Length: 207
Picture 1 (tube, rainbow, N blue to C red):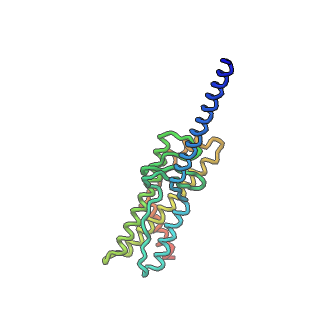
Picture 2: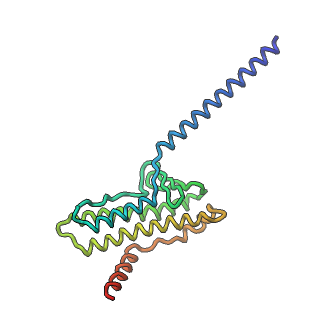
Picture 3: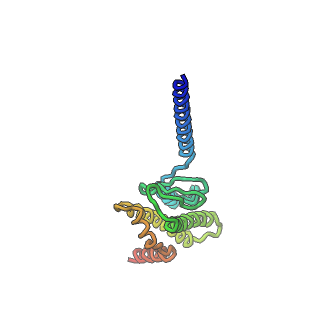
């Protein structure tokens, strides 16, 4: 009799334990699903293209006074997934917290953050300066043209930077490849590059 009671008690404990584990697992899945649902997901490549296209469209028809809104691509306070060239970048509090599928050191993450945040900040600032100059009664067309070149060039460099990072992940050991090559990725001087671009444009016009 005692043996039967002991067996029944053991079975009851096992069933209770299994039920509790199942409930906890279900709750964990629900919480994870809620977190994923709250995450903002952005297609970074499409956003870069949209910002460039909006500025080009405005330049073609400035009479509509519909100034393109300055927008940050990467600088975000809330946890956001930004996809560039197939890589999911996790961003929070204006810094990169991780790249899905890659195991990177804090040092490398900081380097990537610095590069992307710098470029994102420049494109945002140039967009705002352009808009302010357009509504300025004493606007300088040459200044507008120069800032516009800087804005478009910055978007182009940002696009090529994330493309280069994605290319590094095609290796057999993507994390190690990114770790060893990110430091070699130098950001060009935006002003110098813009001046070079301007000079090339002037030379082509003079021919």
